[in-house]
Image (cartoon, rainbow, N blue to C red; front, side, top):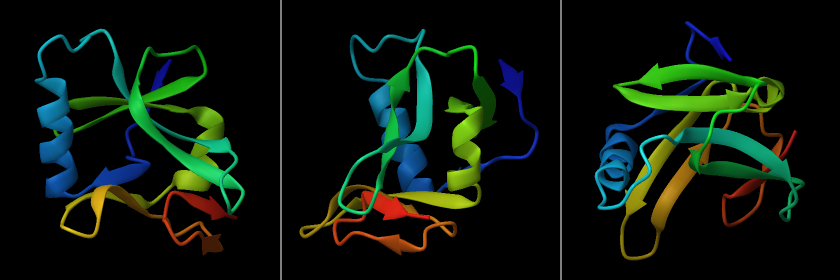
Length: 114
């Protein structure tokens, strides 16, 4: 696993606060790290992955405000420069993704095309 010095993605203060809340939950497995990535599927072709996972051999490691993050090296081309936010409003609750590499996104904001 490589450690990258330049951050491939960034998080808003709201996203950092929500991730820290999840990390402090009772029973959280602290051997896991925050995985940022993509997978095929969704209404626009690719879906964002944001969750806790074990590091794999092909992962780059980076840290944002003390939060250990991992990303498959092959996903960086799709996600580089992306901003992840946390929305906690009446109409929208959850993580949102502002991806400068997406040529189009779906209405729900969880999938995109390049």
